[in-house]
Each structure stands twice: as structure tokens, then as C-alpha cells.
Amino acid sequence: MLSSFKEFFDDYLEKEIAAYKSSNLFKPFIYTMENKGKRVRPILTLMAADSLANNHEKALPAALAIEIFHNFSLVHDDIMDNDSKRHGQPSVHYKWDIPTAILAGDGLFTLAQLSLVGLDGHIFQRFNEVALDVCEGQGMDKEYESDHTVEMENYIQMIGKKTASFLGMCSELGAVLGKASKQESDNLFQFGYYLGLAF
Image (cartoon, rainbow, N blue to C red; front, side, top):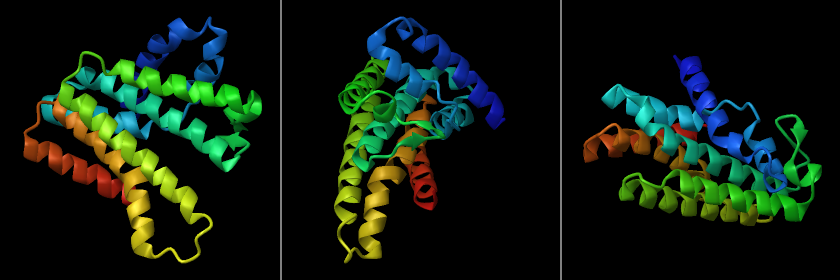
């Protein structure tokens, strides 16, 4: 089941990014998106929609926005941490340079926004609320690197914003696109959130 959702999403992703392959500006973007990761986040979105409406296709644009945003965060995270590798390959700022990687990340964020055009306004709002949480969580992560007094409560708050809220959003948006009730979408957010804490 998981592999079929991944194959379905990878086929969709390949078609969506095909238009950008001829542009030098988007070479780092294509390089990032062609990384054959696990696709946990978009799969979670598709599965949530499928569980409620038996139709995961309607969740594809949101799943795409989620995967693009995830890759944006990795590009910028690698710059901040000066990581030279990502999934065994040179990170974008090592393969090119830091300005190119920043530009690639900015382009990825913009494309994530464009993927949401035409969807329900609530989806756009929730996506950006959680995107802001992720950025705040990353800021806390950087701050805590030099703070040796951080308590477990602070750490849980940080990963709650950086990782858990993002996974919560994945299942929540799939639920909303699957025509879930408010209670169902809230429950699926909580499911993804606690999955993220465990992750």
C-alpha cells in the first residue's frame, strides 16, 4: 500500500517538475526534488484523504506543496548547519554555492505556494501557519546549539514546531481534502503531530 502511494506520488512529481528541467535557474531545484527520499509527508497526506474519501488524487496538489516545502527546509537547513551531504549526495550549497542554494530554497518555497493555488483557502492558511512554526522551530534549534541549559520541555517544544506540527499538517490537509469533519481533521492533525514527536 505504502509503495503504491509512493509510486503514484513520484509519477505526479515527475510530471510537475518536467517543465523546469530546461532552465539553469532551476537545476538545483531539480537536483533536490529528484532525490528519491521516502516521501513520508506526501504519502501521509494522500493516505489521510484516501481513508476518508477513498480518493487520494484530490490531495495531490497539497501533497506536492508539502514535499516541495520539505525540500526547501532541507536546503536552507544544510546551509545553516554547513552539512556537506544530504542522502549521500553533495548538499546544494556544496554542489553549487551558498547564494545559489539560498535562491533554490526561495524558489522551492514559492513553488510550494503556487501548488496550493485553487485549493480551499483554509488549506492555504494552515499550510502557512505551520510553515511559520517550522521556521520558528528551526530558529529554536539553532539557538539551543549553544545553550547547555535547555530542558526537555524546551526540546519537546522545539521539535513540536520543527517536525511534529509539519507531520500533523500533512495528515490534517489530507483529511480536509477528504471532506473530513472539523473533529476528524483535528484528530488527524494530532495523529501526525504525535507521530512527529516520536520521529
